[in-house]
Image 1 (cartoon, helix red, strand yellow):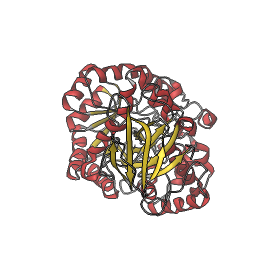
Image 2 (image 1 turned 60 degrees about the vertical axis):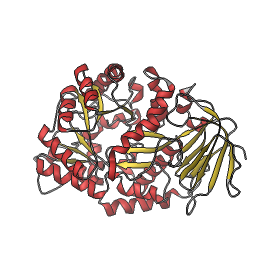
Image 3 (image 1 turned 180 degrees about the vertical axis):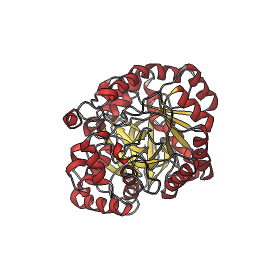
Image 4 (image 1 turned 30 degrees about the vertical axis):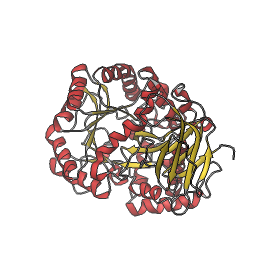
Length: 483
């Protein structure tokens, strides 16, 4: 879903979608020469312009982190229904090496952190995120040089991490080089499970071309394809080529657009794009690469077609009916859905996009009720674009789940359950190991919360105040505990 802030509505008029505005067309043309080399150059300029990290963020240390013992804490391990006391957790390097209820002495070379009775929990996971476009406003895309654009994306990656989201699944964008910069410790940000560009058809959600780009020229990529936001395919052969290209670059899973979207005026929510044969081709490529396909789909007919083709996960699914929900449950298909409760959960839209957003909002409650009734494997994702004000609500979106789930269920969904979905990447998993849990051998992605989120889930919605420590991969990026 592509959303435009009220601040920039005058730039798009009443069309309800920035993608087809004259200003956005100029932006797309301006960015159309962003090759992989151009992206890296922009990222390098971003790092220079970004300067030193802010006061709340410590630069990642050179080499492996040392031993850290967390003591005097209440533990939520990502799986339990309640917190446990009398526990201490030892981190050595990138991993958790012990969860100890015997209070053995800390190793002589370990640093000790007294949590003051606060809750220690796993880092949060967002299963539907757009790393490069989440917080880059339209005005920046229109006027800034590439270095500044990537500096804005770099700053948002840091903010995402400091909100407690230590891992995200990126479902559309040229993030491969950005992911590498984070993994190498060049910039701060969450772990990224990248899809690369979303794969769509002519006229499908994600086809952001202007009408002057038609008819399509088979031997030339459009500007949106060159940018890396989407790839347009209209045959089985093209599907095989474009999906393999993303896997070649390091995609951990494939994102296929099966139907219409909120922000695409020419692709209503009820439409379906790829045929079952097309989708089967993508699933076969993913299987050959030992990973999976997730399909963007709102309507029941689109969801059922994706399931028949072998998709492992559905993105959105808000308009599904009961038969479709039962089919998902019977086939063990995941649902990655966003808890949109009102227009406040999106940047303001107008025209057809606003109508479709309200359609999704109206259907959200029923979709979650069906997911619970049929025990569908459900993941949490937020799906935000083009607004730093909206991305700041990432934790608020998670807290919305209290309408349907208990607090422990919510926290499990955003930790160990989302980690199960990420593990479907199988041999393409960029971070093979345990995520979303606090147990021996798991990655050291940890949060210290001022209060008990199992009692008050709203604590997650105010991370600046309530997250006292943020650790990812054994590195501490935020610590406001005294001493």
